[in-house]
Amino acid sequence: MTSTPSALARYAVEMDPEHRAAALDLVDATNRLNLAVATTDLDEATLRRARTVLDELTTELGRRRRDRVIRAGFEAPGKALAAGLPYRICALNPWGVPLEVHFGADEAYAALTANALHEGPMDSVHGGVAAWLMDTMLGIIMQANGRRAVTARLEVDYRIRTPLDQPLTLQAGVTRREGRKIWVEGWIEHEGRRTVEATGLFVEVDQAVRG
Image (cartoon, rainbow, N blue to C red; front, side, top):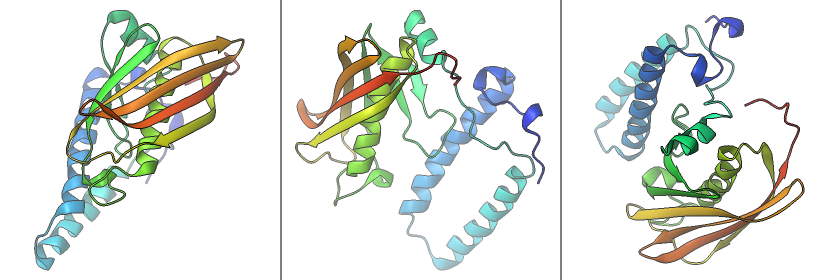
């Protein structure tokens, strides 16, 4: 395995467009693979053959690697907002929950159908996943508006069960600003009922911080 950080892209904007497109496709395929691995019920011999194939692929992909996952860059959500386009969260990170976020001036919206990978209680979205979604939705508003802010406090209220395999809507909006402090609220809805509500306090940090 070789690692040459100085020669490898750290941000998506530094990548050749065709390379970036190939990376996006690979992450999409990996998301589908993760679900297939978690839910397959094939025989033992097939599982072992699949494991061998994945071991070989892991070795191949590891021949040259970065130290960190590729980042979209701090300005990317703001550019999407200015262009009236959606912004995709976790487009290059198969660990996260991919979201296509749409923006208003101080608001963010997204849709999600959670699957078996996100399960906590039986047939329900894991509370930690719900909290991650809320932190992500609240925080992306900061980034889209050019505010380099970090989560200082996040409070999550689990009102009712959030189901798997059902369309969910996510929304977040800024409620108040005071100096470097910004208060935001958000929620997850299913069939018009809020299943999760969240409030957050974000604090702006040094503008010199990158990414």
